[in-house]
Length: 445
Image 1 (tube, helix red, strand yellow):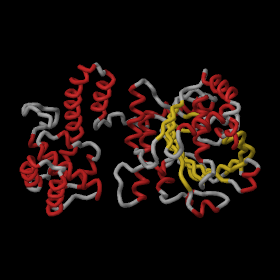
Image 2 (cartoon, one colour):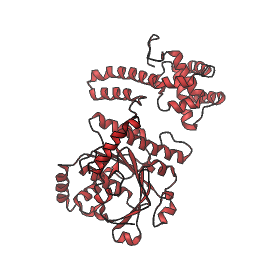
Image 3 (cartoon, helix red, strand yellow):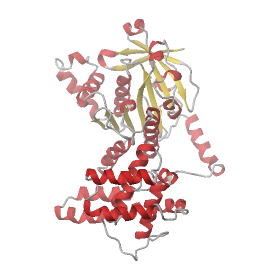
Image 4 (tube, one colour):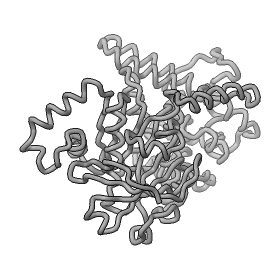
């Protein structure tokens, strides 16, 4: 464990052994404390091994069961951890002492302790980063030093919340509306879909930043094709895009985008490789960046996505759009026994990333069986968890009959929107062979 001087002070609270014991007691006994501090406390932050083990067991139990353990159950957790070797034999006595104090300490001031935890976590994270940096300096691994320091700076930080006084800001809002009325659009408002006739029907005249857009459809309806198409369009317009695939390899995604950019059918990419290469190289001269990442199905969490984005930021790359193909096969941060709660946490996490990073967040979801059979998939047809619709800012379903499929047509139904009227469809032409999700919009119904 990392040592700390008894005389060190950080603003509100002296982060000594007594304070750390108090944190462990709150973890073990107060579910509200765990909710307020979730994700902030790392057992490594505790300088006493016994307290660290107790905190780790308490945090793990709360993650799994969303409640705190009784003393009897907690005692069994300790016995199991000792038996399995998770607790070293030379620390058993320390763990028992910490267990006894955790259930005896006064935790009536738990709300105040919770307020101090973010600062405590950041303080300990900085200590750890400094110690790690010593060995990294010897290796001259400066990028690693930058990362550990940045990670420490991000611990518990929520100081970037945006706010303003409503009445004082009316002039600012009026100026923005005047700009929109005159045809001027501020860059941070939206990113064009790349299809002008679609933009006309979007509130922001494009995809809204800090918002979550979800395409919904039955299997093989073209959700992944839509995500790749709009990611491509954003990149061609000069924006920086991150495309994360959880279902299809990055090579297949790249092939699909090659076909879309070059207007060469997927089946002809090899035979017409020269045409494809030249077209992609030509558009790259004025395009933004399009990074394609691949994760195994069911392994990507929102925190892992955030780490990926931060890794790019550490290299000077700031994204305008993040596309996840697709959210339904992401992993919850802490798996619960309720799939709907897991799904909700994923969609909330994606929308939070959109807000914090000022990006367009785009993903897809499946319809249920009724939606797959319907001519139009509506918001009640979303699979498994209706929270997806509540959380998303815009939900567009992809619909096509067999006759429409034969004509290379589809209908985009605006199933739900936070900022505009929905319940209408846009009829579109497609070129599926060339991965052109929309070639033109031919009507509204």
